[in-house]
Length: 147
Image 1 (cartoon, rainbow, N blue to C red):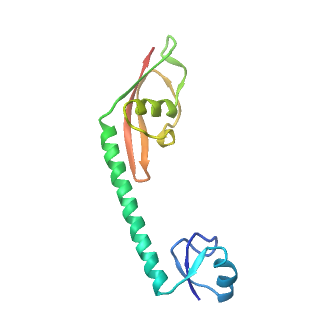
Image 2: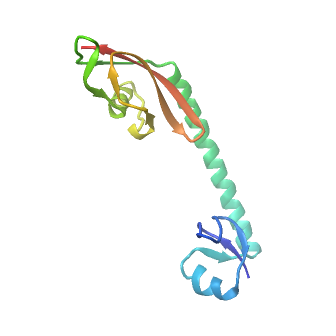
Image 3: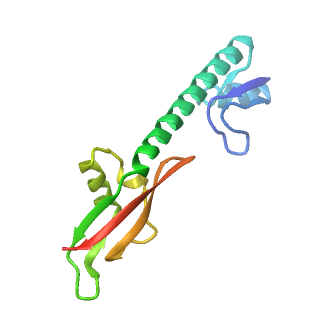
């Protein structure tokens, strides 16, 4: 029996794959658990239309992320923090603080999208990566000054 997987099934296949499985497995496991549907011309056509719509949505999200990355590229964030004599910060600057500074500039970016290898602990200039999409990453200059 040919089935079209609606979600990933371990050791069987990934979502969207067309598979040949035994009829009992399909009727007793895949169909009742909502993991697959029977593959016929109507379901295949419906699946292809859904896939095209999903591809268009992903492309639109990528374009929006690229536009936001271009806006961020010309931006510089300046953060002031208490520091000791040698320029070592009391505490550190985290992704949450960078996200808050971006929010004040008018960009609503989640702190989870800001990539810091290590928290910033010294005064100076840094480049922080902002991962907006799995294919789009922007570099944001951050200037840390002594308060």
